[in-house]
Length: 281
Image 1 (cartoon, helix red, strand yellow):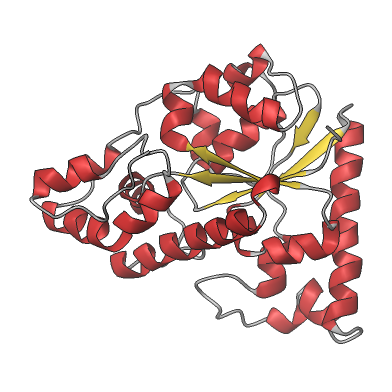
Image 2 (cartoon, rainbow, N blue to C red):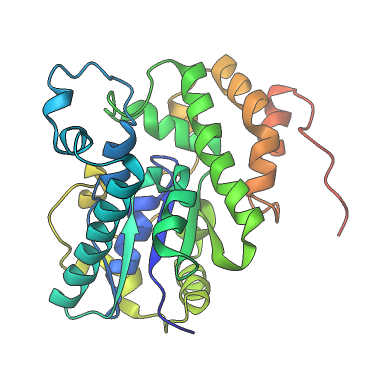
């Protein structure tokens, strides 16, 4: 398989930083810290009260060129930056990890054509939202639970739409499967990418990663572990958990299409009906 660039995206706190470090630990793949081009281009922040917005680079550059031309130039520069960084690291292949990539896949397609692959990282809504609740992402993620559920659905549905439209170009990583069976799941991912899995990937903490923008919690992670599974139980009340499940259950059934991590069992605890009836295989 041709060594195509790799784009990683998914909801914040769903495991995108873990996947970035797993890939970056491979001798052939450079996956550096986040570069916020698309987020800056669209002003994708919760707080938009920026008193000097007009003085920022992208906004001021918009006074010189139409958006279409400017996006093509800056997008090409982003790709060249990734290529140069990979070359500097002695690697032949690059990857870009940003949670919000999942929202801008059509824009990335306009820059890369068909010569790239998408890795969609997913995690069950209860644990994702519990992890978000413990983080301080006030500029990127809304504070209200209902809005956060909408945030989870927006990101997840964007990834689903693209993967259903271009299934041959997309691979879904389910966080729960990755952390419970890391060697198996990393092996499957790498073979899909056309690479040979390496032991350094399961022991990524022993690999020196670049300094830069990423989820700060991953820097303290020594190894792939299952400690964050079911973390929602210490974060949400019974009522909050029921509310989240009612709003996201059907969506999770689509993300976890093989029913490897069924939330129906959690519904039974709360005495709620099942989301949908699954088809018999």
